[in-house]
Image (cartoon, rainbow, N blue to C red; front, top):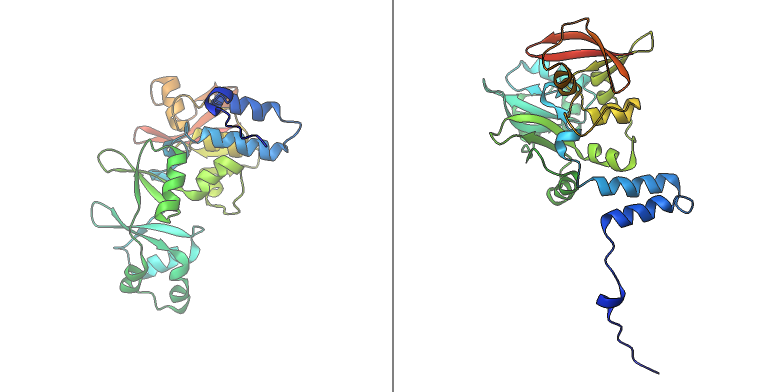
Length: 261
């Protein structure tokens, strides 16, 4: 019996990420397509940031802690979300995150109070803009969180990202929840889509099978403002990336709604 001590530093060469990506791509005949897609998506998590997948702050449904308790109870009873940020004060600062399930029985029995609401709220979890999805996925695990509020360098709320948002980037569409579709997209009778301008291009591409460029602006509104270098008037029709769009509503220096034909 001979004892061999191979020098792995000489015999084994490090495989770069690009080489590994190529290996997986070329192994298409040996790896199920779905598994291949998941592996390739994992490589992209370092390139994609929370900015690319977050729900814009204008789309976030929040509970106003200063509203009448009847209004809050009705919102909880009718919300499609499992967790909602809670705001309070003139500055509308986020003071907590409410897990709907924890107070649903109180809503149904009519026993909900502001005190009981505050007791079950968890502290808000903030993350900075520009955080890579791979890093955020790890942080969700370390902090045992499923929802994060994205803030800029001044602490201003810019968006909301969930664990499900990141998982969808890896495995594709899997959730049965309806809010993202019902609030951002609306299918019209003629087959066109009414789209919120704050919707991210990644979400549009993934859920509506479109092909908007992802190397520039993050949202549809940003893409259109870059295209026109101005705010287009309602009724303006144009084409971007082989997609025909029409401005439906514009206000407050942003385009609020588009129709995708």
